[in-house]
Length: 191
Ligand code: GTP
Ligand code: MG
Image (spheres, rainbow, N blue to C red):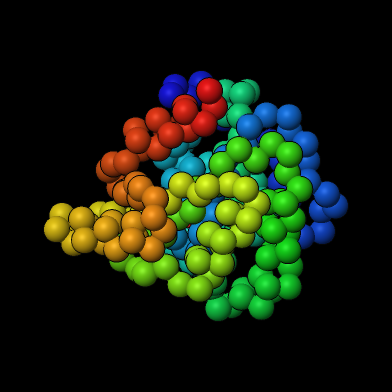
């Protein structure tokens, strides 16, 4: 995958009516707040902070559509599960994201991100079920792979694969390891 152009094209907030029909494949990134969704999207786009990243959970509050090479979209979603926004999330962001999953005619794939150090929680499992219910097989990415040593990494990946029964791709924003494998998955999705 060669990134020729990147443009933040569409932003959907809780007050936006309806889901845009982009007419091109969309690949969405879901996961708990702070898991590294925006960081991964930046790595894929080869940009430093085009998708805004923060140490404070709850940074991304809108659904952001990044148009890549004029051909497809990477879609950054608000994270779930952060205490301060949790109730708002349930009330507003939850339905917004669910509405997007349900109504988008162009959603081609969803990457579900899990912190490699953590076991999936109820929110993650619910997300996974939602996606499967929407007829989409999520691709699981274990983020922040730099936070664990080699042996622990292998152990954690196995534990996640036992939960989700699909291959899990480890990714680190620091050295961008895993990026090529994710590009390959995207290339395959787009062909
Ligand atoms: P929300 O928008 O709040 O849902 O968060 P997000 O999932 O978009 O996370 P974001 O990309 O903003 O990253 C959250 C924090 O984790 C930031 O401080 C990042 O620098 C850090 N981070 C993200 N990816 C990695 C990684 O691979 N390794 C390490 N060590 N830190 C990471
Ligand atoms: Mg974000």
